Length: 169
Figure 1 (cartoon, rainbow, N blue to C red):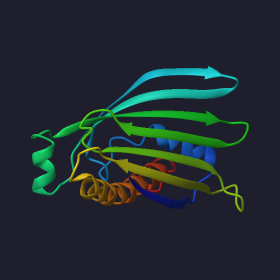
Figure 2 (figure 1 turned 30 degrees about the vertical axis):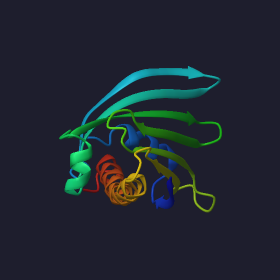
Figure 3 (figure 1 turned 90 degrees about the horizontal axis):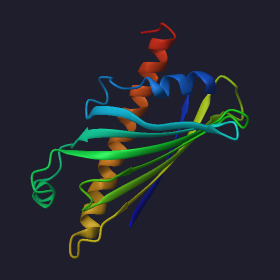
Figure 4 (figure 1 turned 60 degrees about the vertical axis):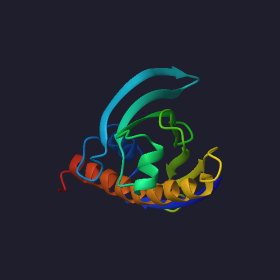
């Protein structure tokens, strides 16, 4: 198993960030997200629970990884999230449900900044696991490298969406 932890601060209020999150796709920084759809949405105990499916095209993996994926070009990802307005937190859990030669799981916690109400902080954790004997460590390393690249693009996509919502593009 490989693990990484990343942080980011967005120069927008938490409420604005939540609005932008739901409007993030499509955007030019994340063309790999080709489909998104809400599967479930409900409110319990004052919290908004959402389950979405996203279909993503693959990044440029090394040829040996493409061989292991048997020519697949897309994967399905489940995203479950909880918006807690009272505590001003938004937590997402993401994992791939197809192409499971390597499974990448991600947990993000977005919260209002402790130093400024006009900023949103993100704590992102990810785990990559593979059960393929002989290549698991290499697959996990490639998956984490791609995850870090995708995270940078996701953050750029979120910022673009926030700027668009505020008329700053």
